[in-house]
Amino acid sequence: MEFFKNLDFEIIKSDSFKEDSVREEILAPLLQCLDFSAFGVNKIIRSQNLKHPYIYFGTKKENINIIPDYLLQIEGINKVIIDAKSPKENILSGKNPEQAFSYAIHKEVRAEIYALCNGLEFVIFNVNEIEPVFYSKIEDLESNWDKFYRIMSPLGLTKPHVFGYKPDFGIRLLKTGAKLGDKQYFLGVWLNTIAKLDEDNYSFSCGIPLGEDCIGTFDFNKTLFESFLKQIPDEKREKTKNALSHAPFKEIYMSQEESYEVAFECELSSKIIELEHDIFCPLKINEFIVI
Image (cartoon, rainbow, N blue to C red):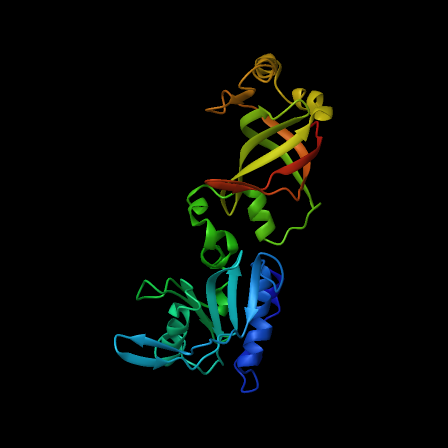
């Protein structure tokens, strides 16, 4: 990711790199990568004051002396607080995480996740657990990005169960910074399923290796259907045509012996589909390729 390539740790370790630099040069770009902003449903609220800056533990009154740099909301619900500290500050134990915890559990906030970053390290806590749920040096954060994303992204904060499935290829492309309209070429993938969605549209899924095994979903319209059929071996073509001509309008392949390879050019679409237990971003096929 471009953000990590631009980091200069000699500058971060210098005395001139203070809390405000951590906030603006590290946290702000990270939140942008996670799709948070000052606008929309995945919202950043900066420096949110408490009306009553104290909390009671039993009969003991504890003053809350911090105003975290960021409060993250999703559809108006507080999810995460993030506090920036200078590189010289301890963010793993002591007063800094203790104060962040007190702010997170305050009745005006009630965020389940609180995080701290000092420019060199990033640590995430859950208010219901003692040990951190995530820790990484900033220089290692790119290699730990998947776990970080599962905890801190809007998807991870609202639908963590989807990460129990094989990752979606389209979502993975979006996470790596691919842009809508970027062309992708596949010169031989084996289909898992093919389905007729309606009178004008078809879709198939297949396994795609991208760091780990992903499932890709690829859509095409009826103008490409004949080109698709030409990709199918002669002995399997009629069976597929018949399966797509009547309910349930799909064919499932349990092995490579049943399946076949296709080659095509496609692009990322803007369509993200959310189901109860899954989320995926289909790619739009522009052309089937004859090899």
